[in-house]
Length: 278
Image (cartoon, rainbow, N blue to C red; front, side):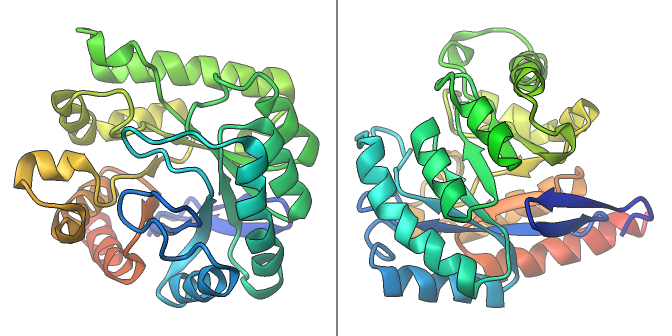
């Protein structure tokens, strides 16, 4: 545990950033997410699963109504709102952890924040919907902003330099809109518009992104980056996920977005203890 701790504000809720890993539990209220689609798309099932995630160690819940798996079918913002708003309204009353809305539509983010969500997780890093940054700023919300550049996978340039350039543009958009810079988390976007060699290179060098001055989030849970190495289906990728969580903790990543909270929480705490004993 580092002695340089600070609070990360999520509207009326707080997280302590002191080097202790934070586990972000995934709550998909979708029909077609690659691992858990259809499991939690009723209100009772969603609330029950969110409570379980917190009990197992999640300090944030990321709620998604639109799958972003490879080859996903895009739904309308109205349908996305229909899926997520009842869940957010219920969880605000029953879960103490900050709630993140996983969306790239400003209209969905606006409705979710009005319903009580605390953060927006935008997988396009404010660079798809031009209204997104203003919505986040108006609500005084926090944001998880991801690297996702369609041209990146064709680039022969240095992967870390490319990610830094994209995220620097994202941060400029956030500043121009008035988003509090102390309320931003950055995500390198493993599996989004990237080749397998690029994904592995980013994972091996993710510590270099700490120079951007914001907490980092890694989302690799059961993703195909694991299957490319181990040749396993999603329901057999837990060990690969845990290996990457441990690696990321050792490189200073503070937020880990996962399906399997208990196992990742335990691995992350152990990895942090070893890291901090140096």
